[in-house]
Image (cartoon, rainbow, N blue to C red):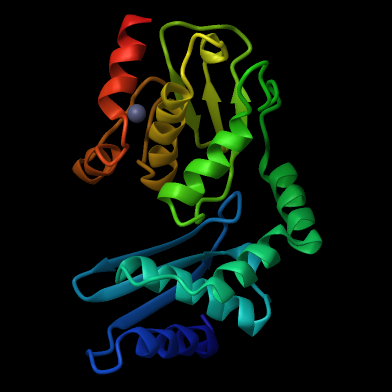
Length: 228
Ligand SMILES: [Zn+2]
C-alpha cells in the first residue's frame, strides 16, 4: 500500500485529534463488489479497507473518504464539503460505469427489479444508508423475490451481492417501517459479513444485535411481521 494514502489518514486524524497519540494505520484497497469502504478500530490500531474503485481517485476524494470514516470512528460531526465531494465522486459517470462493469465481471443475479408496485427497494436502501450508515454502504442489487415466499422475510446473498426481499411485503397493508426493518436487517448482514454463511444460516453476532436494536421502530416492525 502506498505511503501517500496512509499519510492522508494520519493528517485527517490530526485534524480531529490534535494531541492524541497517532494510532497505527493499515489502509488497503479491497475488491468489494461495489463501492464499500470500511474502518475498524481494534486494540488501538485502525484498519481501513477502501473499495478498489477508489484506486487512482483524486487526492481530494481520498481526503474526503478519510474524513468520513474517521468522523464515524471518533463520533465527530461530518463536514458537508467532504460529504458532498465524496458523494459527487461516487455518483460520477466514471465511477458509476466502473461499478457497473465490475458487477458484470464479478457476477450478478438477475431476478427481478428493485421497484415493486408499492415500494422501491433502492429508495429504501438509500434512505436507510443516509440515516444509519453515514451513506457508507455500497448499494447491492436490491430485488423483490420472484415468488411471494412466506418463510423468509429477506436475505442477503453475498455471492451475488444482492438483497432479496419477499414480494409479499410489497403491499399497501404493509407499513413502510416494516419493509425498512427487513432491509435494515439485511444491510447489517452486508456490514457484518460472516464467513461460511450457508444458504439458510443467519448469523447474528453481538455487535449485529446491538446495532439492530438501534432501529427506532424495531418492536413495532417485529410485531407487525409476526402477525402478518
Ligand atoms: Zn439475519
